[in-house]
Image 1 (cartoon, helix red, strand yellow):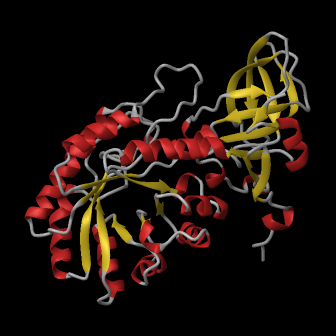
Image 2 (tube, one colour):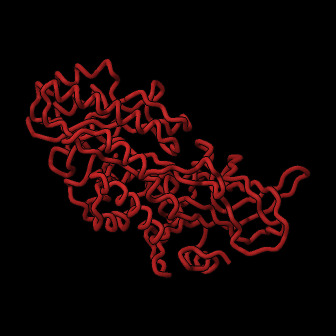
Image 3 (cartoon, rainbow, N blue to C red):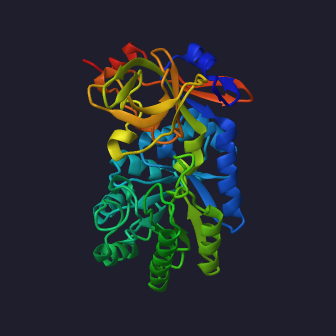
Length: 403
């Protein structure tokens, strides 16, 4: 029987039901430590990207580590606060911040705000009412990584960051509003990137921006944030899914002049491998050319395969000596939602458990109540003990907001 964090999958399924997201905290701690160690060797600061996965218990765990936290909503901010993360460690991102979120920055609930557009800067100035705040400028450096268009965050086809044509106007507004202290520049180029070259190009572009702004009189601008998006291996034997993050950080640090601070913002690279989604097979359908396994999860608890073709390696929890054959694993939503195509045992049957690997990032955080399905629980496993971090939603939870 498959084990997760040293605990049997069938016992976890009996205790918590399926579907369920299991988090192996030893894997999470190992991934985070590796990133922090690689960065700190070059004086690079690490912030965890909350959008990948954030729960109060996870925020409490991050609070004990020497990392910052990037949030993009009031909900993520409140989760961080409940986890005890101090305001100076928090950066507020977002392409469309609400007035309430911007005001939260001015009352000291975050350490700094990332400006994403000219229109946003106008609103920030208006809301500031003379109050001071550290800000970064999110740039669109035009560096495009070869990844899915939905997770590409730089170039001409993305909504993120200031367009070059707007930079002069932004600098003029900052000069006229000295309460907004420009501390640096930021650019994120995408997710699931395995090529080191876009990172080097992005860093060079940001250095040029930073140098220009400092020469323009913004001497306090001493930080460049090169984002995250470091690729995570999803296929167990894929030679294309490898990335040398320490080498990338070493190269970036070597190119940065003295007096400039570099930061990274990994999310998926920290938490993805720690997650395993456990499903139970509800039905097997065998056609002449294709076999389907319908599981009790769906695109509601993991929309990534349907949204941008994401792959999760699938394994049967029960050991089998039967030959393997291709199986399309589908969810039970009212879509033809193929969650994965995987080689699975020919004796796979209803009632068996399947485990989807590397689901720690962007599954629970993107989950919905499509078809009015309740969202699954999140179970943390450490030292062969399981702890509920998020309970399974009830039907009453799903209907709570109906009026």
